[in-house]
Image (cartoon, rainbow, N blue to C red; front, side, top):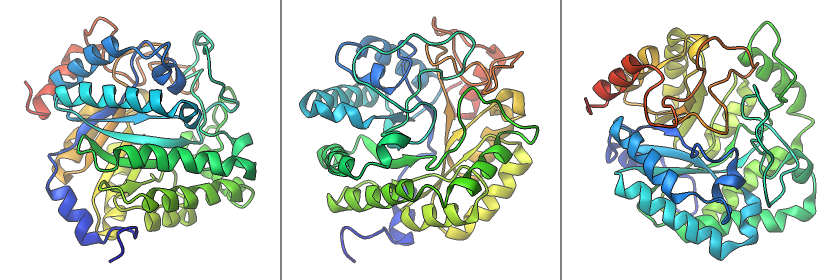
Length: 349
């Protein structure tokens, strides 16, 4: 087998059998509104990262998913040093890290430097696409993006503190912030947007393919993945064919999650749910975590500490209870019973 080929199912399962039950969150410190604010030198907040990853470990979490951004490669030495610092902090708390490199969600037009203040009442109002819809269409950007992928993965591709590489989050995601969602809900909105846009976004699909090609060229020891997030057979087949391990997002009911898992089992590869948990949609820890534990599926809810991302607010801005996140900024739980449940099911009670 070529070292830069997709992993066999046997290799993927052997890797997964060596892992604990992976349970964690999509992590960004409460002091950062987006990926650039998290990672730029001026706002890299190691003290808050250390404190909040400690709280994650106290909940029984042993892994986190963390977003990077291509613009940060403008300072390779500094960026790699801050990744090293993050990994050291996470390791000290017994936490592995899955890094996400590209992302089609939320706002285009990312710029280095000071980031805007969060918009009141708006979920993830400062979150940034990477590289952004306007950049993906520019072939002149490809050498820079290739350098970013190969540079980051080349530097940490044999680092045991890195669990896996999530190369492209929600590729071709057509949902635009501020538009609201149709009555059919998020899944229907995303599915409709994807079907309309898949054929009109060949550059995004090309970047998806290239990201795997670039990553495999540096021969990382960790598996590669890119997750499915809507019921589009064509796109999901493409994502699965590229991935060493199968990842997916689920913000729906326990019944829908169970049906989705049964469908994904046909790949006969490890399953990782890299995003879930939306309380106002009936997708919460009490409903989902027992399924993930029973099926031994790695799972990462969105959010840990309520902060500048404002993801406690629903996508639509309408919410009478927290949407994502678990803890207040002082470390206390949004729901004490929920915190106790998480600690119990992870064995940290």
